[in-house]
Length: 106
Length: 211
Image (cartoon, rainbow over all chains, first blue to last red; front, side, top):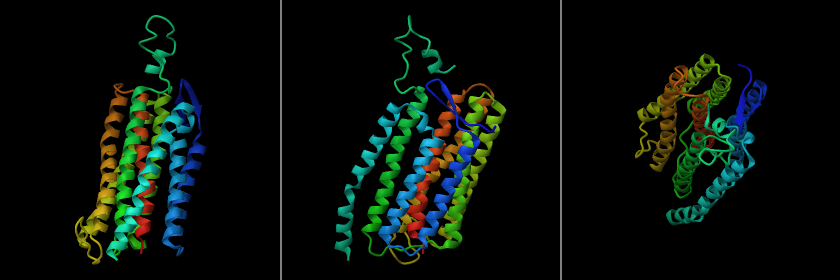
């Protein structure tokens, strides 16, 4: 019960319980950092940027190690990750309109 | 025997019918990844909608105090992260053919998921008692605070509850030999995704609204 493995194209990759616990602890540390930053009196923009960056690092760790994306074929990673990132980035077109709504209501 | 095992040795005869996946993964796992990508975009759209409404509302209020809400959120995060670890052990045991061990780890995952749901619902009921709803704000600011909070966390909670229902079904099926390790792995992918979504919900919905 100590070893965790990922099966990719017929091979079994032993990751080891220690690696999993290290990733789990790393994610907990990131959450703690997020809470500390929240009460560090940063500007809203700085806080938002920091929280998003930390959440992306945490999500990356989860994707690569918990969901074993790191051990899938490169073609699979290139098919999924850039596609999703592109869509997520394109969704950010809404922000100028949000600021327009704010100016109209002030 | 998985479809990959079936396809690998085929060089003649039915090779065209059992051609290997170009991604080297089983169909059910590929479909789960497709679902995860689609669902990630759904959550991203919901979070962007929340961000849009927040930026566009000059009278936005920050309702969450460190105690009890943020502390509760931290505990919920710890519970969900730990459930991802137990899922990893369940998948590992399932792939090693240790069925009873895998079922026990899946049981632990279910228990942790249920704990998360209970903590979340307790928080919701506490807020409702204070006068919060999707259309009311007891602090007097924008009513969109409650609307976005209950929408984002509600969709996530729905995913958690779906997992808490699905994981025991997979566990029982796996114990009886009806499901294979691939099913456990696919279910594990879903659960890790639910965990991943919370990694964005907690900072953006809770921490950014902390007083």
